[in-house]
Amino acid sequence: MKIVTWNVNSVKARFDRVLNWVDANQPDVLCLQELKTEGDAFPFDELGDLGYEAEILGQKTYNGVALISREPLEDVVLNMGDGVDDPQARLIAATTGGVRVVCVYVPNGGQLNSAKYPYKLEWYARLRRWFDAHEDPSRPTVLCGDFNVAPKALDIEQPGNWEGGVLANDVVRAALQGVVDWGFVDTFRHLHPQAAEYSWWDYRRRGLAGRDGMRIDMVYATRDLAAVCTAAGIDREERRETPGWTKPSDHAPCWAEFDL
Image (cartoon, helix red, strand yellow):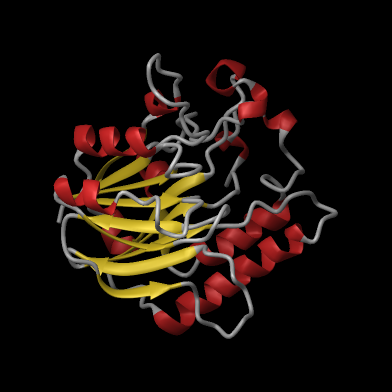
């Protein structure tokens, strides 16, 4: 089973790139973030023509997450349902092919002195409580998405530009680790302990040419599932500008394969 996560930074703007990538790479499950649509611009029919079904949690202009799968999507959950008044569309979960898949778009955090930063930290705390209350670490589970945290300095191409900020400091890393400690393994690091590869390149820093990437998009798996993870990678080429195509997302697709 090949599971992919990709922050597309507007599914409407990246419509052709998403369909082309899916057709070329044939993932079993695709998790998308930052749809930036309530659903009217989502390519349900086109994905159906390629043999996929989809469930989305959309939001106008911002956020939004989707699960796309060859197999039926069952026991679908939209957002955490924890009683918190939070309209932001950031979590979708479903079971497909015997695996529980949770797709998240974690808040960026803005600046350290903004209200968005404590919201990010609390969102991570809520996510851990949600797993404790609703999921089972003994069950095959994948957690993937845009986590807006570089887990280690190794995950930053130029650490001096980012360390200490909202994407790379001890507090946000501890918040992420609090979720990982529920029972997850970083599949990419599991197979590539020292690889310097990245998943996001800021438009404002000249993208790939700026050589200032970060790995903030991950595919985590519960321990027994990680034990049968046979491959994991990042499709850096999809981040590259391509003549004749629309502008790429600032994120690259990240994937993991499991021998199930």
